[in-house]
Image (tube, rainbow, N blue to C red):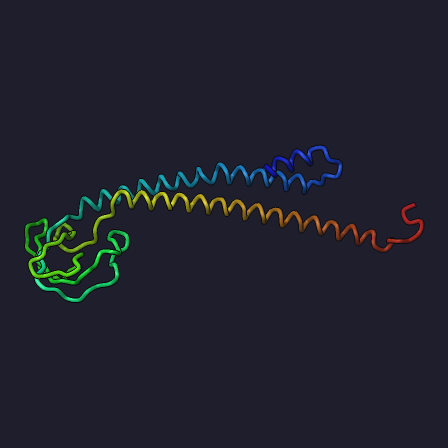
Amino acid sequence: MRAIGGLWRWRHNPLRRTTDLVEAWVALAAAVLILVAAPLIGALCGSLAQDALQRSVREQHRVRHEATATVVKQHTRVGLDPDPESSSVRDAQSRVTANWTGPDGIRRHGTVLAPLKDPRPGDRFTIWTDDQGGIVSRPLDSATATTHAVLAGFGVMLASAGLVEASRRLIVWRLIRRRYARWDRAWEQAGPDWGRTGTGS
């Protein structure tokens, strides 16, 4: 609104300089870009990210398989979450030796992280495997993918708005420098005669 008011104010003002008008137009263009273009760019990038992430979700669910593992022996307790994107930090993780059967029907044996607070031999828990029965992380779920896409779109929108505002400030800074340089030249021309009687008559 300030940009529109500035344009209207300088429209017929006899004191208007070209740089004043340029500055007002730049402010108006920046406002339009921030209010219209930046959200559109953010929405487009968010949509593209959503499509890519949902494809990734479908692919991960296609090649990763849920299996049931049985605890054979407990090892040490793990306090840190090994995969913050797909598992919950609040869930306790314990390193155990376990048996499980892969999607190919072959029984496997190995050390895995179990979401059990106090695992005992014979306890069962869910794991995720690849087509060969190897342990993989939990596949990304659709809701998490959507959250990532929304955050990506919002981030791109903010970055676009910041870029527009930074460009506006740079243009205004250059206009002000040019204006000051013009003033300096005018003062240098008027300086030798300043204050003399009859100057300019």
